[in-house]
Image (cartoon, rainbow, N blue to C red; front, side, top):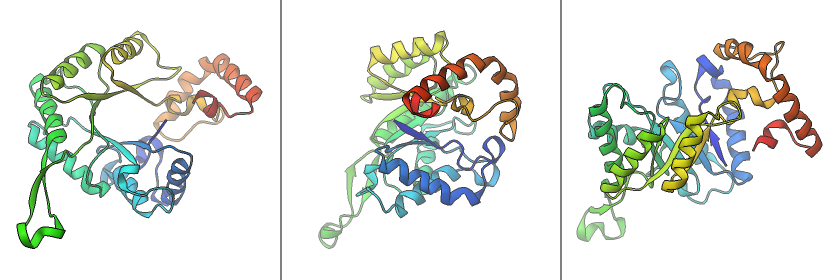
Length: 278
């Protein structure tokens, strides 16, 4: 099980305020205490001046955690790098990874992910970004070996900026293509992230799962609670603030039977609806 941090820093959609940081830190610590150590984020998470705030908060929480963290590698950070139109070369994509590492204040990511495919509008850019994933995985970085620095100075050693690479928002056909390309470069495709919940289980999602299973790629579901609609917290008289209220007002009336069924099962098991879905 993983923990998504899309809301951290996002004022427009999620209503984030910096006054929430202490509560978010409590949630982070509670997740670790209960065995959750995969945290998903992105370099684009955070609106306006808060761009990158999700990564900064994760880095802060890791450093200040009083719990079960013995080393930074005990927390697996899966971050996504946006395919911005100005990221046109593999080197620029690698620099995006380095910037994320600086915000997180860690040496290496658990999973570095391409946030979305540009195949439909900028195929040449996408190939450059694929090469960027390869370079992140293979990157040769300089490390000072302090016990012998007076004898040999700084040494070069082979260590990637990421332990694994993945993609997000890819369709089945494009997933097969990038898997094949990365394999030809000696880089395994570790994961594919897609919106997956009881509200988003269409033909493409199911086909993607089949492809992931056949290729040995781990599927990571995002928004498994349907942006909050499947939690049972909201109804027509109790809507979230911001753009989600417009979406919820349109969709929730059609979910009454589903939500009623979920609540009945959850009550019978003595769980919340969110716990039941997980």
